[in-house]
Length: 219
Image (cartoon, rainbow, N blue to C red):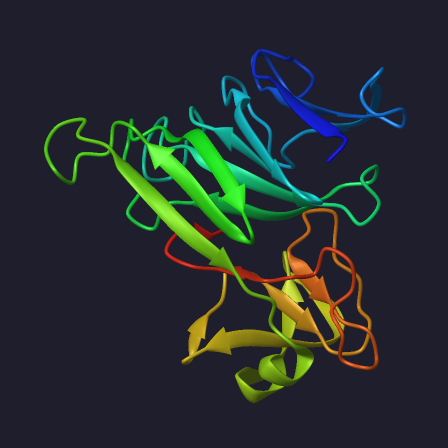
């Protein structure tokens, strides 16, 4: 408790109507709140409307960008997950899209999170008929360094075309996990896009390094 998240989906920091989310905390039982963070998508673009929907559970914030476009069409939508250890500094740890995304689905119009389960609404999904809508449910589960090694490719990995020192490409059942995600077994740091996952030398995940897996494709 003690934290409020507020979406400003028409904010223009990233581009026109790209959107943002403000985080406020109280230190006096709700008598007053101070702004401690402003969250933006790492790939913010015009008219994404990031922050149209927001949710928080403990140190994890989810923000929907229902108008985000993709290679699959306009307004397919996306949801972004941020994590904080101290309630002040937040790292983007996932960019969530529907595996069966289609134009005008508006995935991310509504979001919710509780106990590591993320729920995202796509109110114009057409699976049950035109604009019938759908809800996607995903469970966050951390992957350990041992798991990464057990399911790893043997070739050195690269991230955005650049080598990642001491890292292996993570796969589960020989399928890539989350597109271009790298698991660093001995302390390699995540890049600015938060797509490499860092582990300490004793095999424990560093802050914000959980790998989110589930029905949506994490890109």
